[in-house]
Image 1 (cartoon, helix red, strand yellow):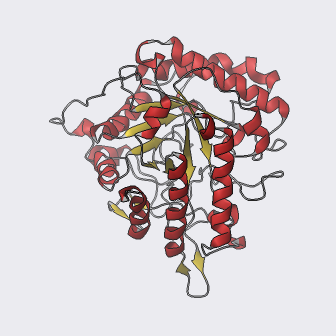
Image 2 (cartoon, one colour; image 1 turned 90 degrees about the vertical axis):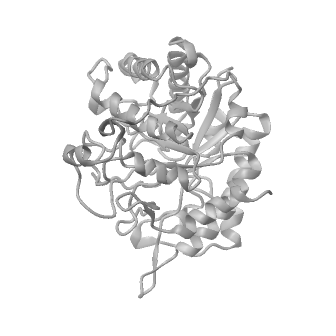
Length: 400
């Protein structure tokens, strides 16, 4: 399923924020359980130690976020529509893949997960699916990483309109109750993110903040998520939880409207592919290939906005998706990867000033398609653009 984002409605002049979710991949066809059986996963490694799920320290979300450096999304995998983690062309996830990402310096991993294709009308999730998600979360815990587990691509049934809330809120509550109870013994390195880019598909202001009714409905959804997880008790009573704006956008209408629960363990999740005309555009209409001063100014403007609404008020933020596509330039089809290295260093240095960890959106696509956010060659355990990863890590290796 091709899912190219479009910008609908007025957005802040300096930025458009989208969430990586295409299924355009770099190579190969969908793998099935045959590859799973052949892969070196924990379930196949009988001698693998039992994963230590860590402790729950009951520190504030702000203190927890301050421990994080930089992250990577396991995109177009568990979030793929089609019922399997390989449905959108990425390979079956192995322990070695996550080891490689962690060994390269990433200490945060986001595991976008679509649940509705594996659950009944009441919201009960198939145990096999939960078990497989557990397995990959454990790969990350084995590496001491922070893990953000969410509900992704659920906009077909989670619709932020007040008149529709009663029709799906019980299912939403059942889903999150089961997830929370299943992961209840995990320590504070596991974070839950209630929604990914909540919006009304095709609705007014879909990507730029929605409507007054939509923003009000989202506040209800965010509160329901928090209340549902907290009700399961134990570690979940103090687990860090991520809530988000309409479409996860950094746009004034939705930033102003966001209601943050009175809870010291809440984090705001935002997506910031900025500026849009540099980081992403349709293949036929790419506008900006090079990082320059004007691009940097637009990055600054985004973080200034986030600071004014949240970080200046001690409200922690994680940018759970950011990235820039690898573009081919000119008749020789040279890549602009060197420019992306400059952009990433500038972007992350500015984020670091605000104390905001950022998680690169990696959908696995590098060689083809118009959403080439992929940086990790999962089949060959190597980076498509090693210089980009070096650029990312240089921000955190620096004493500044």
